[in-house]
Amino acid sequence: MEEQQKYYNYPWYVTYTYALAAVILSVYAMIIAKPLLMPLMFAVFFAILLVPVCNWLERYRIPRFLSAIVSIIITISVIVVLGFFLVSQIRGFVEDADMFADRLEELLQSADALASTYLNTEVELNLDNVVTLIKDYFQENAASLTRGLTGAASTITTFLLMPIFMFLILLFRDMLKTFVRKAFGRGNKQKEDKVDAIISRIKSLIQQYITGLLIVIGILAVINSTMLLIIGVDHAIFFGVFAAMLNVIPFIGPIMGSVLPVLYSLITMDSLLYPLVILLGFYIIQLFESNLFTPVIVGSKVSMNALMTLLLILIGSQIWGLAGMILFIPLGAIMKVVSDEVDSLKPYGYLLGRVDSDKSEDRSKLAKKVREIADKTSDLAQKLKP
Image 1 (spheres, helix red, strand yellow):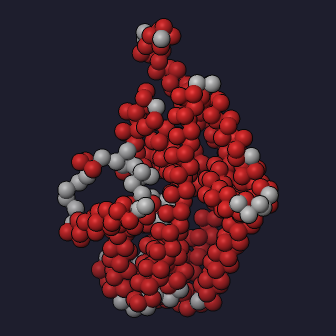
Image 2 (cartoon, one colour; image 1 turned 45 degrees about the horizontal axis):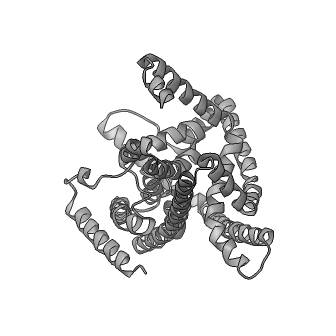
């Protein structure tokens, strides 16, 4: 108690200096240790997801090391199948390369004609000039692009560590849990019980988040592909699955996923109506995803308010790039769980959480209707729970 009082008696600039130094050192350590921490964090999340599978296998007296290996092989098999699917779809683009180039040449000539007619200028837009500009760009930025490719190759190499980390975490999961209990409980029964409760909540949250996210991706892949097939877009299944996978990145992912099919339809289709219909379709699907699918399937405990989510995405992108944008969302949710259980951190848990009274009342009628459906579905799901 005296130490806490002494701490609070420090001048504000001393406290600020300590806090700033801690933040700077933590961020610096995360950047330097990225090749180790990033695959380790992914391995922890996927290992937590696979714990129920291992427990189920171990009920039939399968050794722990073998159950861990089987679970990891199943995960890798699913990823490999998905990779083969994406590669097979990309081959379709290669076959359509000539048609794509001819259509792009026509659009550039039309744009050149419009510029000549309405702006009285000769822009000389053609495919050869565009290719030349791209080549010049690559030559001028060869050094930076090479560094980027080297960094990407290094990241892929570090991800090869993930199966090893996952195996060891699954193998020693009881020991790791006991270590956390002893480290933070410090022999106090009440503190150890609270640590056990936090561990259980984090485990449930991660499993709920990843499982729910995979289900939402599957639903969006079917809906996106169906919508694009009805409109008549070539490679509709690839665009639908790709857009659904990008949905793991909040805010930015859905936009990136819709841009590619819109641009493709703009180049390959004869009417501007198709890109507009595709954009409208993705907007409606996104309304259902953010107001119905994610709240009901993933759960409200995982969700955070938009401000903190956006900040976590930006911070994660600056520290770990694209992987950071994905990882920092569940990390923020874990921070919220810990903050809600620790009295001194409860204000931060409140700051990370989502407050219903603060939601905007200026939603469109469609968004409000989807929200009503989500609330009814959520209530029904709660009643059906045993």
